[in-house]
Length: 337
Ligand code: UT7
Image 1 (cartoon, rainbow, N blue to C red):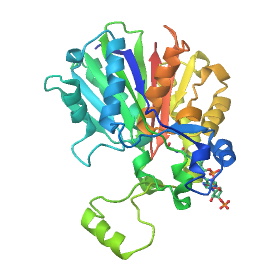
Image 2 (cartoon, rainbow, N blue to C red):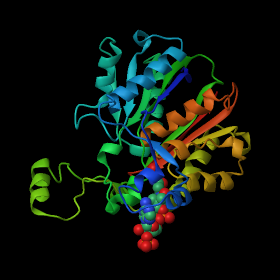
Image 3 (spheres, helix red, strand yellow):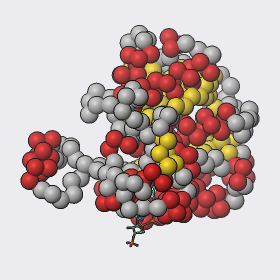
Image 4 (cartoon, helix red, strand yellow):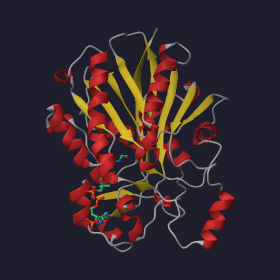
């Protein structure tokens, strides 16, 4: 068995910055409400003509990650692409990235686990590396949320939260058993599937019926995201901690051993709550939701890349990544850097 290390990291966010103040032009909200409840000050959204799609932003982040790994696209053996906002209903965005990279016919797997998407993708990639199947895997999280949000007051509880962006890592084989991904876990609880969801269109409500409803009903159509915010919040704070503790236990380590916690950026209040519960200092938790909002599958790789770029993660550090979101799904990855 081998181990897998993160060899290169990259990120990309669209140029357009949307402040809380700008959102007040579209809906009944306020900078004060958004900051107080979520910590968010601004987010990046794609704009008409900038050429950004989920796959193309993933490509920009991936290119940087590959270069920083000292590799070329030809060295990549497999792609795992996490997104809830793919370019097309099908095929997935992973195959589009394969084409953009101009590499031979490597496999490309799309992961649809929403806010936990990157943790799921990383855990899957880790297994392919550990079993010796592949040497270098591109793990990408990318989202274009802004095109799918209800920007009227009706959608404000969700729409003020989400941002667009992409992050990527190159996961590579190592013989060093003390380095890299030490433990990981994945969980789900489908009974809460509709507590945070975009329902339509789907096989239960096909496009032709959605079109009929749009033409006949003025009512709220379920093709905008719905979130039972309070309920999601309460579950999130419990599951984040559980997943982190499970990973630490599996590796025979304790929370005192942690150097850095990179949470999925769901809400600054969630991160602060967990930080307190875990007894971590401010410099041991990486928060950037203030600048980017919640970028779902992209939030962890963007935060991880930023933390690494700033020098906050050093060789030998024990880093834990954890996420919770729609599904419900949750999980963690524990990494010796
Ligand atoms: O990433 C995936 C996982 N996601 C999460 O973990 C998110 C978890 N949930 C949350 O972060 C929070 O629940 C939210 C930030 C989504 C909402 O915060 P909250 O403190 O739970 O607010 P609320 O939904 O209970 O709404 C409180 C009030 C309501 O008004 P009334 O009924 O008290 O009169 C809402 O209508 O705030 C109102 N409201 C807003 N007001 C101004 C909701 N959205 C907005 C808004 N601006 N954007």
